[in-house]
Length: 220
Image 1 (cartoon, one colour):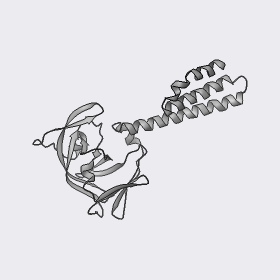
Image 2 (cartoon, one colour; image 1 turned 180 degrees about the vertical axis):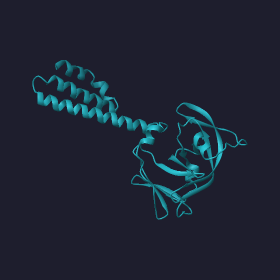
Image 3 (cartoon, rainbow, N blue to C red; image 1 turned 45 degrees about the vertical axis):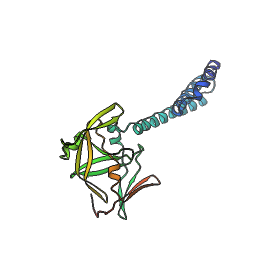
Image 4 (cartoon, helix red, strand yellow; image 1 turned 60 degrees about the vertical axis):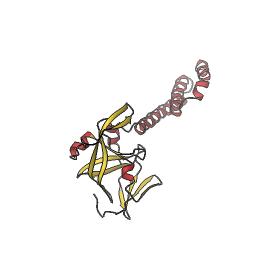
């Protein structure tokens, strides 16, 4: 036991600069080890410390998984399995609750095909995957020069295209520029060129509120 406490004292300066999740993991392991050391002297306390340490490790794992999804939105297969809050229409405005991964997701129809988009105010242009372009019958424009897209894997070229119609909630956007790229892992993004077409948008208590210039009674 004395050796264990001494090792943690030695790690003190390093732990002071460690990330919170790592500190929590170290604390959980410490609880488990201390519980093991007390097993011969106080079985009840040892069991309680062991359970607390294991529960803390599970919590750290779940928080780390959620953080990973939030920082890497291209990990679309996991995000797709997470329950998305339902978008609603109130007073002509479309309201989109914040998803568990920290993003705003929209179910929309692109040229009549149902697709899923992440709203990204940091993206200048709307982006769709090559799979969505195929499903929606969207062809890259051969007369327009490719654009350079910067991703986590570096810079790559993407083709410009034009979406005939994006429809969801109380909103319909037609004849909208987009880039078609196969480097997003199936992720589709609604960028500022879409948001700028709205009368306004805002976030209230974790809900993204989109106000169209001309509200649609039933945009699907």
